[in-house]
Amino acid sequence: MRVSARLAAAAMTVLGLAAPAQAGVLELINDPITLHWNCDITPCRGNTLAYKRVYVRDHYLAYDIHTRPAHYVMRKVRVMVAPPTVVVTSGESHDRHWLDFGDRNGLVALPVSGYRVVKPAQYAWVTKSVLVTPGHAYVTRRSPHYAYFPEDIVVQGSGW
Image 1 (cartoon, rainbow, N blue to C red):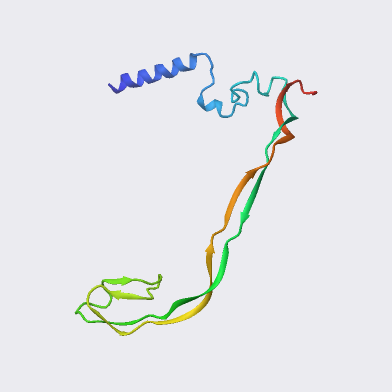
Image 2: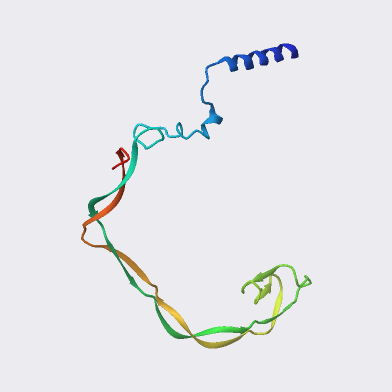
């Protein structure tokens, strides 16, 4: 069985060497001529086509961006200076089942089950800027006019 498989593989190899030469998949990677799929209309090696930059006159559309900045005012705001002091009244551990109402550091954390507030939170009035109206932007189109745009075209001959 193995001998017949080896003979079949050897026969395919010999027949493959005797076949007419054609570019395979691996040869196309390094072949600059056949990589261009349409050498009739694109500049390739072997034809006389070349790229040339010309300027085309066409409509030029322009836009204006109008912005209205955000409006802030100074207002007095009540902020928490110190969190409340809380004592757990149930028999649970202090580090389990806590609700976090504060920032990422757990500034104000309350236990889920029984607790008692020993000392209330301390607040202070602070004057800070508060957003009244957010910024707004909108776009309007100007009347179109003509302008010249660069464009690459394919021409015959390299002397153009």
